[in-house]
Length: 281
Image 1 (cartoon, rainbow, N blue to C red):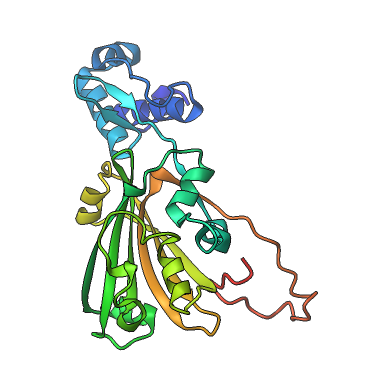
Image 2 (image 1 turned 180 degrees about the horizontal axis):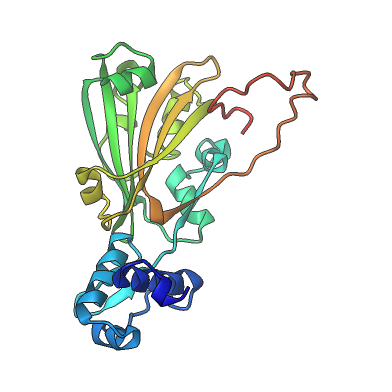
């Protein structure tokens, strides 16, 4: 575009050009940007205009300042968050692999069991939690709030809510850092005769609350992905309602599944699919 016909403020134009260089790989992740003075000379503008451009870039989470000076393109190596594969029964029933560890392995990343910390509390269910668990609002439930980090950087939070009779006295109410023993929480349910059979996951994107931004150390302007997960036994008993808050730039979402063929099963094509039904997954 001819700059004379470009209605964007100069700071926005500069920010867009630097963003394009980052997106194309011309500026590599972790690479230091030219100094404010160098950028001002390159674009033929004042240093204050360049500072405003950098502020815009920081607001999108693309660049960050480092101690000792300089602005750098953010390292963006998102973790592959598996879809149904992360819940494979062979991982938690027959082995000692919980969901966040499955994601790390699939991403070729290191992990420590202490990358997960948690607090456990008991209190009345909010309207949302009560609806998720299928209990009256105000019913006493357990909340197991986890923070998952990678090399000290928080990546997501996950709070699971349970009915008291299902988990009282089990490893799920133990606040010790790390998964709830061998096989994690799903193994606990298996041992209690409440084998997880199917689940639904609902995903939504929104801007974080101030508390979420602080907990996840989010740069200004970065959204979060919210996952509401409901886990059932084969007889439709709800055994867990969980809410996950993920830093959007730190994950990619991967789903692999067999394409359904409702006609082969004798189901009319006009029949609506159940929203969020993951049994076919």
